Image (tube, helix red, strand yellow):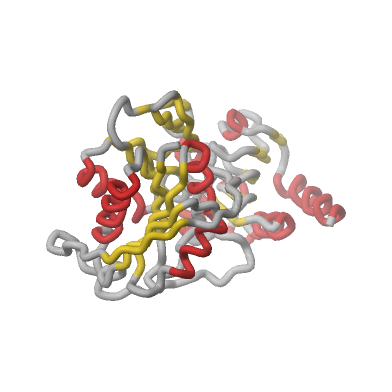
Length: 322
């Protein structure tokens, strides 16, 4: 089985920034998963143990004094070193803001091809085939690379965590990244939202509200259903622009892309920009009084009705099952 690198993002304090279990599972389906992480010297052991529990067969730890002070350069250097060490046929990087930056740098270093925003991966003989949801989710296409290494950015949340716990082989190297062409990070302030709800990008269930709710005080209906289901709260751009909810809750092409098990859209018409951010959800439920709303084109289940009548009944039904 070919070695597949999976880049693991960490915070400035050395903790895992997101859950890489889905990307490791995707790698395990097409090869041997090798987790690559860049940390400050002496802080890699705990991370390696965690990555083994998430399914990494190998963990490559690049210790760099500049890991938290140079923007993307140490991470790209670590991946290039790991690619040579393991003769990797592919590198998977989550398509976050930092991940896309690192992917671009790595492609230039390796002379590799780039497959962007993959929502599924498979093997066709020796070739890696990526599936993409494009043009706002209107089309599903496949792409591949005929020869040479390939870097793949994977859509966060698109891959289920299915890998079994492993006892990884760990390799630690010292890395001196060249910072002459890199932006320097002067300071980092990590702000974590204090909430009992799941984080939007990683949530298994998302309840989103849109313009059809009519007013800021009506948006509480979204939060009530989300709390009943243990879900994250999302929103359309119209709801964010109206000031009903902060922008970090926006789902769509210019917001957060999500791929939960269940996505419930309340009063969202379903403009193409919104569908681009949620269409890969496994099950989509739409509630809207407009029977011609585009959201019904992608919904697995649709209710044509008034959200203020339907949703309270739904909340009561969920409560009766708990």
